[in-house]
Length: 141
Image (cartoon, rainbow, N blue to C red; front, side, top):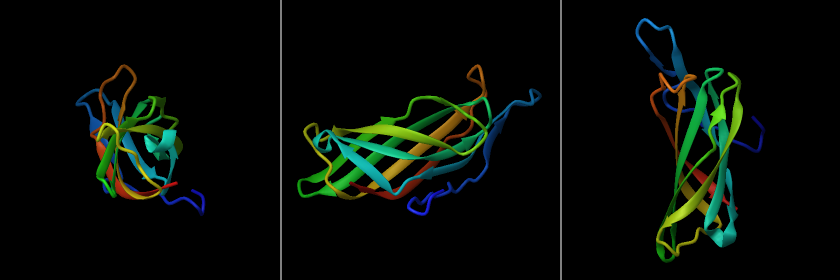
Protein backbone atom coordinates (compact mmCIF):
# COMPACT_ATOMS: atom_id res chain seq x y z
CA UNK A 1 0.00 0.00 0.00
CA UNK A 2 1.20 3.48 -0.78
CA UNK A 3 0.68 6.54 1.37
CA UNK A 4 -1.47 8.13 -1.36
CA UNK A 5 -3.75 5.13 -1.60
CA UNK A 6 -6.26 3.88 0.90
CA UNK A 7 -7.54 0.37 0.88
CA UNK A 8 -10.62 -0.72 2.70
CA UNK A 9 -10.71 -4.28 3.86
CA UNK A 10 -13.99 -5.98 3.21
CA UNK A 11 -16.05 -6.74 6.29
CA UNK A 12 -15.48 -10.41 5.76
CA UNK A 13 -11.72 -10.74 5.92
CA UNK A 14 -11.64 -14.39 5.02
CA UNK A 15 -14.35 -15.80 2.84
CA UNK A 16 -14.12 -19.27 1.44
CA UNK A 17 -16.20 -22.05 0.14
CA UNK A 18 -15.06 -25.52 1.08
CA UNK A 19 -16.38 -28.32 -1.06
CA UNK A 20 -17.09 -31.24 1.26
CA UNK A 21 -14.59 -34.02 0.97
CA UNK A 22 -12.61 -32.47 -1.89
CA UNK A 23 -10.21 -30.32 0.09
CA UNK A 24 -10.50 -27.63 -2.60
CA UNK A 25 -10.94 -24.07 -1.41
CA UNK A 26 -11.57 -20.85 -3.28
CA UNK A 27 -11.17 -17.72 -1.19
CA UNK A 28 -10.57 -13.97 -1.21
CA UNK A 29 -9.06 -12.67 2.01
CA UNK A 30 -8.51 -9.02 1.02
CA UNK A 31 -10.39 -6.59 -1.21
CA UNK A 32 -9.59 -2.88 -1.43
CA UNK A 33 -10.28 0.08 -3.72
CA UNK A 34 -8.13 3.13 -4.46
CA UNK A 35 -9.66 6.43 -3.32
CA UNK A 36 -9.00 8.08 -6.69
CA UNK A 37 -10.46 7.02 -10.04
CA UNK A 38 -9.71 8.36 -13.52
CA UNK A 39 -12.34 9.99 -15.77
CA UNK A 40 -12.03 9.25 -19.51
CA UNK A 41 -14.02 9.79 -22.72
CA UNK A 42 -15.55 13.13 -21.68
CA UNK A 43 -16.86 11.61 -18.43
CA UNK A 44 -18.59 8.52 -19.84
CA UNK A 45 -15.92 6.09 -18.61
CA UNK A 46 -14.08 5.77 -15.30
CA UNK A 47 -11.07 3.57 -14.55
CA UNK A 48 -11.34 2.18 -11.01
CA UNK A 49 -8.55 0.18 -9.40
CA UNK A 50 -7.62 -1.53 -6.16
CA UNK A 51 -6.03 -4.62 -4.74
CA UNK A 52 -7.18 -8.12 -3.88
CA UNK A 53 -5.62 -11.31 -2.56
CA UNK A 54 -7.05 -14.73 -3.33
CA UNK A 55 -6.01 -18.36 -3.36
CA UNK A 56 -3.06 -18.97 -5.70
CA UNK A 57 -4.16 -20.44 -9.04
CA UNK A 58 -7.80 -19.33 -8.68
CA UNK A 59 -9.39 -16.87 -11.08
CA UNK A 60 -10.37 -13.46 -9.70
CA UNK A 61 -13.57 -11.81 -10.93
CA UNK A 62 -14.27 -8.13 -10.16
CA UNK A 63 -17.43 -6.15 -10.96
CA UNK A 64 -18.12 -2.49 -10.19
CA UNK A 65 -21.08 -0.14 -9.79
CA UNK A 66 -20.35 3.59 -9.71
CA UNK A 67 -22.90 6.29 -8.87
CA UNK A 68 -22.63 10.04 -8.63
CA UNK A 69 -25.13 12.82 -7.99
CA UNK A 70 -24.67 15.66 -10.48
CA UNK A 71 -26.74 18.76 -11.35
CA UNK A 72 -28.94 16.79 -13.74
CA UNK A 73 -29.60 13.95 -11.23
CA UNK A 74 -27.79 10.65 -10.73
CA UNK A 75 -25.31 9.04 -13.10
CA UNK A 76 -24.87 5.28 -12.72
CA UNK A 77 -22.49 2.89 -14.43
CA UNK A 78 -21.20 -0.66 -14.27
CA UNK A 79 -17.96 -2.35 -15.16
CA UNK A 80 -15.67 -5.28 -14.63
CA UNK A 81 -12.05 -6.25 -14.75
CA UNK A 82 -10.52 -8.89 -16.94
CA UNK A 83 -10.35 -12.26 -15.25
CA UNK A 84 -6.98 -12.56 -13.51
CA UNK A 85 -5.19 -15.61 -12.17
CA UNK A 86 -4.57 -15.22 -8.44
CA UNK A 87 -0.97 -15.15 -7.25
CA UNK A 88 -1.71 -15.69 -3.56
CA UNK A 89 -0.21 -12.22 -2.92
CA UNK A 90 -1.77 -8.76 -3.05
CA UNK A 91 -2.37 -7.95 -6.69
CA UNK A 92 -3.78 -4.93 -8.48
CA UNK A 93 -7.07 -5.07 -10.34
CA UNK A 94 -8.42 -2.44 -12.75
CA UNK A 95 -12.03 -2.14 -13.91
CA UNK A 96 -13.36 -0.02 -16.76
CA UNK A 97 -16.73 1.37 -15.69
CA UNK A 98 -19.12 2.91 -18.23
CA UNK A 99 -22.26 5.01 -17.85
CA UNK A 100 -25.49 3.04 -18.27
CA UNK A 101 -27.99 5.58 -16.86
CA UNK A 102 -28.96 8.01 -18.15
CA UNK A 103 -27.91 6.98 -21.63
CA UNK A 104 -26.34 10.39 -22.30
CA UNK A 105 -25.09 10.91 -18.72
CA UNK A 106 -21.57 11.93 -17.80
CA UNK A 107 -19.65 11.81 -14.54
CA UNK A 108 -17.95 14.96 -13.22
CA UNK A 109 -14.81 15.50 -11.15
CA UNK A 110 -15.59 14.97 -7.47
CA UNK A 111 -16.94 12.35 -5.05
CA UNK A 112 -18.81 9.24 -6.16
CA UNK A 113 -20.09 6.06 -4.56
CA UNK A 114 -18.40 2.79 -5.51
CA UNK A 115 -19.51 -0.78 -4.95
CA UNK A 116 -17.03 -3.54 -5.80
CA UNK A 117 -18.05 -7.19 -5.94
CA UNK A 118 -15.41 -9.93 -6.09
CA UNK A 119 -15.22 -13.69 -6.09
CA UNK A 120 -12.63 -16.28 -6.98
CA UNK A 121 -13.04 -19.70 -8.53
CA UNK A 122 -10.74 -22.69 -8.31
CA UNK A 123 -9.18 -24.01 -11.54
CA UNK A 124 -11.91 -25.62 -13.61
CA UNK A 125 -14.48 -23.12 -12.35
CA UNK A 126 -15.58 -24.86 -9.16
CA UNK A 127 -15.78 -24.31 -6.29
CA UNK A 128 -16.17 -20.53 -6.20
CA UNK A 129 -15.94 -18.29 -3.15
CA UNK A 130 -18.89 -16.35 -1.84
CA UNK A 131 -19.16 -12.86 -3.29
CA UNK A 132 -17.39 -10.18 -1.22
CA UNK A 133 -18.94 -6.72 -1.55
CA UNK A 134 -17.11 -3.52 -0.70
CA UNK A 135 -18.94 -0.17 -0.63
CA UNK A 136 -16.89 3.02 -0.39
CA UNK A 137 -16.39 6.54 -1.76
CA UNK A 138 -13.95 7.47 -4.52
CA UNK A 139 -12.86 10.80 -5.96
CA UNK A 140 -13.18 11.11 -9.74
CA UNK A 141 -10.40 13.09 -11.34
